[in-house]
Length: 453
Image 1 (spheres, rainbow, N blue to C red):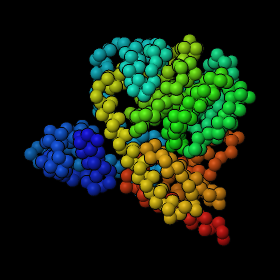
Image 2 (spheres, helix red, strand yellow; image 1 turned 180 degrees about the vertical axis):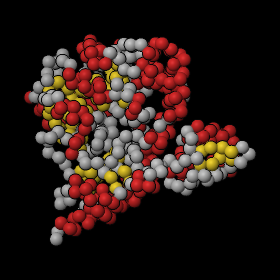
Image 3 (cartoon, one colour; image 1 turned 135 degrees about the vertical axis):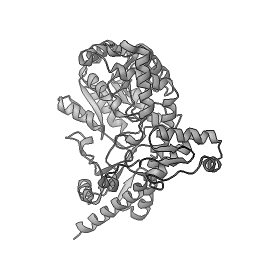
Image 4 (cartoon, rainbow, N blue to C red; image 1 turned 60 degrees about the vertical axis):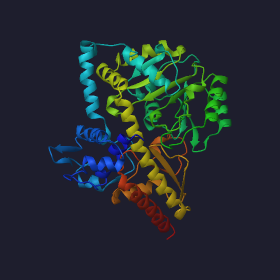
């Protein structure tokens, strides 16, 4: 990691963990330069970054001081260990950088941003996205790119429009993204589920479903599955694409955490296709902030005309102001700098969570199991023994300042639900991870003991 990012990251963590409290003076520029073996200019850059985000402030001829805690001042929230919230941590949103990009976009594009655009998106942003997607091994033409108002809009359009295979049903992994499940249930869309675990899916079952059911498309999250956190191997991805071609099924690939990938050799499903079967979706919600409401969809030629028509009817175009600002943000070094920072931020939390679970597994392996192979996703899960109902564990922990989200909504209502607990690290404070895992396992132990009396 570049020393600049390391200094920013570690100073932020000291503030998060209250090692540096509100009003405390930071070490001097000279001390920090010696500590990190960098030049004073690198330290000044790091401190300036923190100052711009109103985390520290400078006093002339005195130094830098902590201006605010990165944890909310609400005492109840400070005490809460939050493994439930999956939205990004607001404390690391690039507010000032993006504000600059919004102002720059208004100066650059002026009235173009305040009129109707096109269903496809701002042309300059599409050009920028085409170049960026190549970094993820998604090589496509601009004519196949669409800016969408979040991945949910793309899924809504794809669910509604007719496909060339003239099929009607959607196949969804179980568990899966809860808002898409809610969407298909609300609109009465014919849907089929297939079980997925940390070991993958049953390919014989997948082939049988493709062969016998009227499957329009298979919705999948090959990378950092939500809520399981696991990923398909390259061989599994190749098998899925091959079966889709064999049985005339489309694939909708939700690559919402592409920016969190640490393995440079981990390619998306799209990379194994010939650009005819895979619809590739990428979100900016996790890497920048959800309120941006911009995603990108890569649409095969056979679907472009229908997708254009349905999107135009749904919203004419996505926010032009957001598109203009995002284009400037992606084009500058701001995005790459923020991406490196947020990857490090979440990876550290994920590794701490897995280390705490592994330690508890050694001591309490008869109570639960989990996938120790996933170490850099924003979320993971543990599987409880059948004598310990997951929802009862969640209910009991609410009164003990530990919040966990029920996993039921990630399943279709008719699909058998596993006895799982989903754990997110997006919003849990660093100092609370180990304590939270200890509290969780202790509650499981107590509940199991009570069930035998």
